[in-house]
Image 1 (cartoon, rainbow, N blue to C red):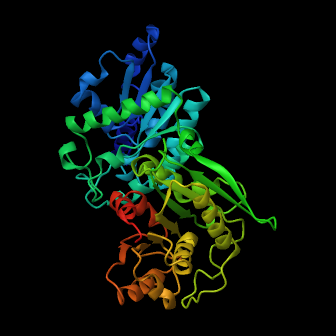
Image 2 (cartoon, one colour):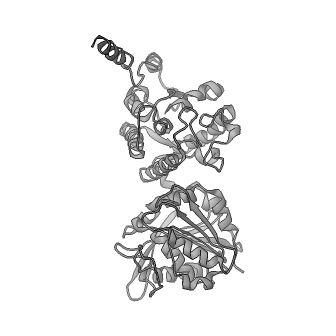
Length: 462
């Protein structure tokens, strides 16, 4: 009994400052004694933020840039100290970089929802105090040297997708370190790290350039709403009063006599509605277009139609194991007619470089669209969908890269496998990526894979 009492008392003593509120207490007091002379920015984070001052100290010179990183911290600890270490300092901008230690379970098991709830709570606190928010992606990490039993990359991808979509929906700025520092194999590029998790000086130099760009955009109010505004709301109307809501984005500075590609994107079931915006939010499609810089790097038009509630791209049961193509759905028919109208009106669109991709319900739609118009599209990326294998011959010469998660419980991976098998009996052109340990969200791997987007835009119809 005596040993238990001493142990319990000792445990309570060492945990009295669990969020480490004392670390920056005196420094915060000193800062508040001096008036702001410039835009004040506070960086809230863990060891990756704290290490910035050690590996690249000159970055902080002559700036009102306050580092409030604490090594090893998780998001609940940061949330507790967010008021004294951020809000009370009256900054103009807060840069939040958090989540990796939660994935490593430094303070116990944490679900993706727990992590993102804490981060968004910090963002809401900042917003309520008129502080602009920059939400940073979690950096890539293949593994944790101190927790080798944890495989982090899937949670990193999911958290980043959530944060990017949250930033777009709430007019914050999303700072994507991940795409620049990612080695293509779920890890941090070696030349940028001291280990699989933490950046070195070269890594911080790269991150600093990205942060400078984000700060400049934030100060100029070029937040995530700017991305949405690139997609103009439009409505296609037929003479019989039928309509199709859609969004259309165009490349910047279209030049006469130059031809540009067009991407058709078919959303999943959660993108349905009549608001003419949810199709962009579904599965964070708008985030993928932004992350891969489709409008600028590939100078592409993007056409995103929306299916009404309770309608589908393909009139079929998604659980079917013997799909046979039926009459074209009304949504697909309207999409084809709207697409033809857009191409007719925009002479700068290259008819030989019209691409199509879609996920889930839109994956079924993608297979359906290319089978109904086998000589129209230059290439296709169907994600976790299915089609009618009896029409495989019609599309056997089309470049196709199909994706599906091995553990998909919504649409069986066999639907993609049977399509690819039927095609590969006729051609070796079809590509297929079966994503290990992935359920019905294999699109996140497509969103973060630069190779697949480059492959798509390299294709051209004869």
